Image (tube, rainbow, N blue to C red; front, side):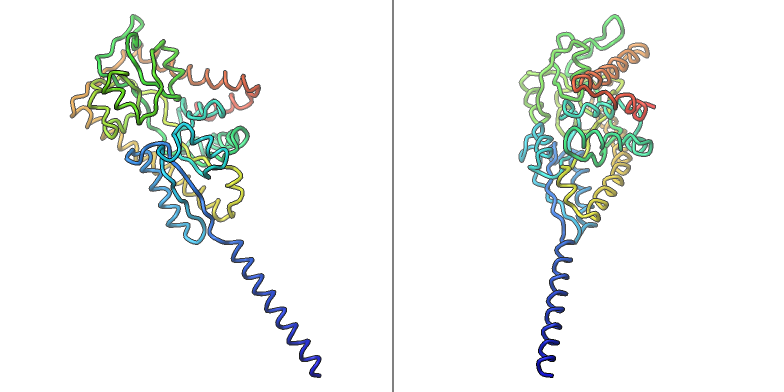
Length: 339
């Protein structure tokens, strides 16, 4: 009997140990996920502030599930190097314009030339196509289009000139360039100098450039309005700022973490879109109050100007896809982003 009791005690102990091990394994399986992130622009810009607020939202609602640690902005990893860093897993997540890696994912130009907003693109299947292209070509998930619906103007320190065709004449103008509108500027035979946004103030101060394109908001945050006295209308293109996430890192997250991050990013697509529309109106009023003159194309000239912009974006996308030997997404993206 004593022998049987000892066996019983041993069995009970073994069961208890197994239960504890199972509990530890279960707890480990559901341990809080950790994510690292960087952002392309300096912290004082509205676009970065949107991203940081979204991260705060994820962290607040993700306690015990997932937490994102923001490592910094362009001072941590150069803005043009960040896409490769997330592709290669140096960081898990990046908030960046898609045009910074457009050579690798040509489909991003569909967002640049889009006539729909982020919510419409998600509802009609465009966002899913964009995510699929990113997974296929760049080893990342494209989680969302943030601060969408904000367009660009050319700002000039000198009064703009117009050609005989009614289109802006950029001859003699030293124009700061950027990947998102490079093809458009080339189509206009502009003389350009490419540089990060953080270097433009000094370039304007020294006369290295005397004009630049920028969105309809944020010029005063950058203090470029100290030099820019004219804004050219109409506006063109869309910001293509997105949240991209290393595919392998994404797959390592719990399903709960994935759903929480994705759902919150989708919420912020709409929230940031609405917030930025209000900012566009407010900034236009502030620029005018500060003495900036808005110079418009004629109706005919403006139509030609916008067609040149659209043709440049779609043409660049088609050319890059041709170079990759894969144009299967071109027609579908045109259908979803310019229905």
